[in-house]
Amino acid sequence: MTEYLIFFAIVFGVNLLPAFGPPTWSIIALYTLGGDLALPILVPVGALAAASGRLLLGLATRYLGARFLSARTQDNLAAAREALEQRRGSTLLGLGLFALSPLPSAQLFMAAGLARMRLLPFTAAFFAGRFVSYTIYGVTAHTIRATSLGEVIRSGLTSPWGIALQVAMLAGIVALTRIDWRKRLGGGDAPEG
Image (cartoon, rainbow, N blue to C red; front, top):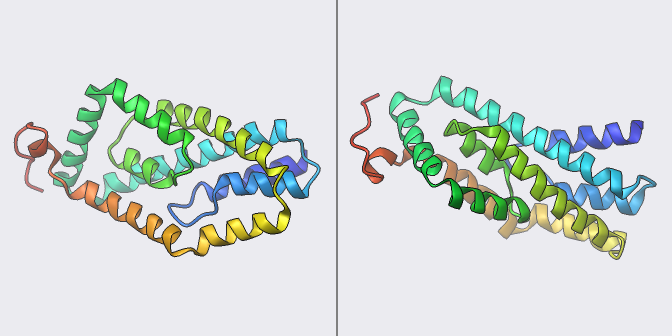
C-alpha cells in the first residue's frame, strides 16, 4: 500500500508543475518495468493523481489570475470563456481529443483556470482520457526494454523540440491573456483597467 501512496504522491507532484515535468505515462512505465506493482491498480491511481494535480494547478492559476491580472485582462478571458461555453459540443470534443493525446496538459489547465472555466467537468474528461491513454502506455511498457525507456524519457526532457513545445505553450497562455476576446468575438469593448 505504501508503494501506491508514494506513486500517487510522485504523480500528483509532477502534475502540479506548470511546465517541464516528466509525462505521467513515463512514470507509469517505469513502475511497470521496475516494480512489482499491479498495472490494473497503477493506471487508475495514476489517472486520479494526475487529474487531482492538474485540478489544483487550475485552481491555483485561477486564484493567482484573480489577484494579479488587470480588470481588462480578466474581462478578455471572461469573453473567451463565454464563447467556449456557447460552443459546448465542439469544446467537449476538443477536450476529449486533447485528453487522449500525449500533449502537455498543464498549460491547458492553467488557461482554463485563468478563464475561470468550470474545472470539475474539465478534470473529469481529463481523467477519463488519461485512464485510457495510461492503460495503453502501461501495457506497451511491458514490451519496452528499460534502457530504451530511459532514453525516451531523457530525450523527451532534453530534446530541443520538447523544450520548444513547452515554451511555446507557456507563450500561448501569455498570448491568451493579451487578446481582446470581447472585440474579437463581437461583444463590444472591454472596460479599461
